[in-house]
Amino acid sequence: SSIYGVAPFAIKIADITHQYKSIVNTDVDVLTLIARLCKIPFKYNEAVFGDNSVLKVSFKSSNEGVVTYKDLELPMGVEIVGDLNTPIATLSSKKALEFDLFIRADYGYASEEKNKLFVADHRADIDSKLKGELLVFDSNFSPIRRIMYYVEELNSSSHYVQEKLELEVETNGTIEAKDALAQAAKVLTAHLNIIGNIDLNQE
Image: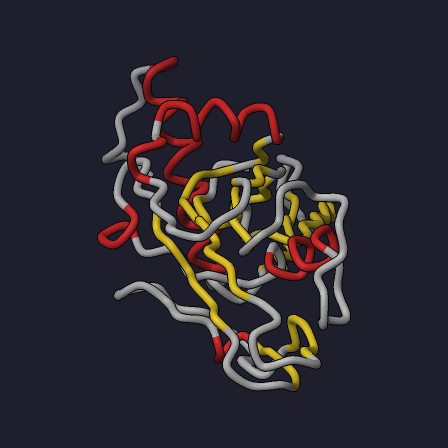
């Protein structure tokens, strides 16, 4: 829950004024489009995102057919990992879809209400010339999909109880499991250091 990631938090779709609307000449409505865009695995880069930086991912259709991750216009330094041919929508008209998607870095989960407060504080950073309403939604910033742990007592001749810990960590591909575990360990150690004034030079 303390590992940083990147997620969309708002979108402006040309001529769309609310979330409960279909998008003409496409196979998606607004909610479906947002749900698919929220699954895009943007890679976190601290140098690119910085503190509370807002970046814009854009798309403007010029052809009919399937829109995929590789069709998105990304800001410099922003990267999508995984299959770039993952579909987002299918268009039946050349100018059916245009949007500006706004992404930022954070950790954990942010509700729509929390993101609206963020938008209110950073309105100047959210730049779009499209006609329509800025739609704000929930964000899941965590790159961690699933964690399991197993503790097994070892058979040992020692007088002390010895145990083995196994961690099973699954990510969305934007971070390696071992790197996520290393970051988590640093966060935990920093907290414990404050509480117990631990000597970090000791094993």
